[in-house]
Amino acid sequence: MTKLRETKKDIDYLVSEVISNCYTCLYFHPEKGRAEIFSIIEDAVDLRNELIERANNPAEPKNRSLVRKHYLALRNDMFTKIDELFERLSTACK
Image (cartoon, rainbow, N blue to C red; front, top):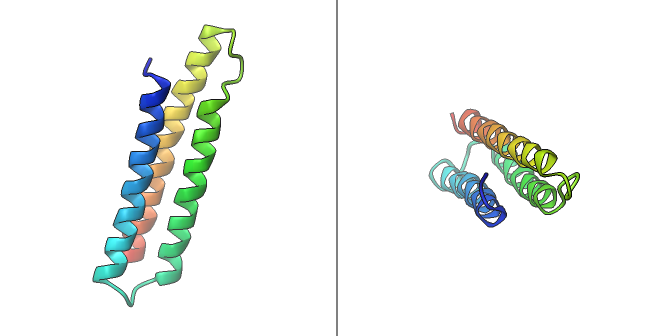
């Protein structure tokens, strides 16, 4: 099981990569889908806030088994939702 601090750093890193790629896309393709790209940035920030909130508040802090399952589900959700944001960005920049 990873540490909570590392999980939060992973969340911040992945969300910042999505936002950085959004601004890079805007820089190189200023005419393509500005509203969609800004929507992706807003969703990325909302996702970051949601994941940090979930990381700070596990369901049952006394039960180690449930806490591990909670953080495993959190990491799985993080990777799938970040992947969805990158896919949306990819289609917006085509």
